[in-house]
Image (cartoon, rainbow, N blue to C red; front, side, top):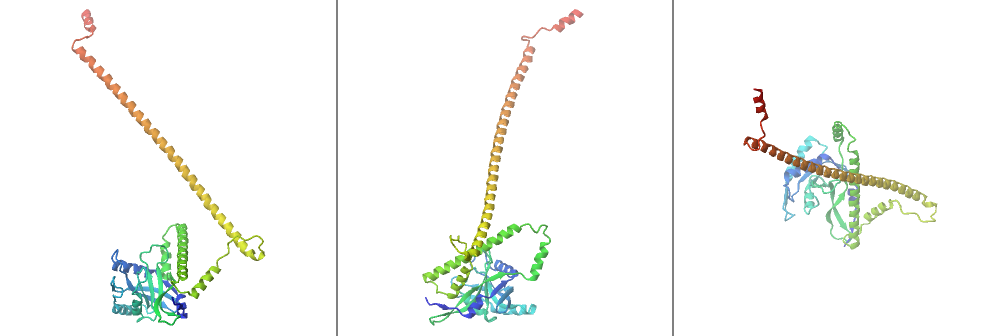
Length: 360
């Protein structure tokens, strides 16, 4: 595979910093929800407004553009450039500082027709910026990817071809937006609530971002080794600079001289810090285990008490049932006695009548 040459223009584009306003993300998501049906592979396309001074690109506003494309044939698409021109003129009247600097789509990845659409936007800006906004992100992190189109020049003298080069992007709020957020935070009673969760979320996002970058580096190096990609000495030099910045945390060998005193101090400090954190994790695990064991014992005691209460209630119900049955039998015997006296059978003698006769 022929190697490619990295020009100064490409290096300048890669080093360009791109910042996107949060309002732009909200506008893109709103455009996607209005224009794209759920479950469809269609994407939302629009124009980006802001400032571009060559080293820093600030995306501060955007507007939607009518767009249609054939899902089967990527070369068949329609973009209303008349609508772009009319909207661009209207935005110039509102804010002359905001110029058309590029375009966006809802991605989530690059598509075959993106280079052709990018050439259309060159009518309005020399080097349009493409920002892909992932409206349905599956992982935490920055949901934007910024690209510039370049001409890839090959060392063997063959015809160059156009491609996209990735440049880092961030989400930054303007001063007015930050003031609005601070004003909203004043209505919150306890601002400290959620601080721990916020810190943990930020650390998780940072670690996930580092994991994705290392995964991309590993995939790139594997493709270079397999011959699928050409060797790029600029990228390899940057990777070597990154690896040179890594601290040496290996255990020092016996008999090392004092030249590695700084490294040994760093290793000792790292070991102490790691041991302290591991001790905290160990203690928290012990507390969690003891709490779970206590809950288990309490649960068994409660189950035993409930079983004893059920057994006592059952015995009480049987005893009451037996007492009720005995009372019913006694009542039946008493009711049978008076009936025999009325019939004249075994009736006792009436002594009151004889007494009355003697008195007379």
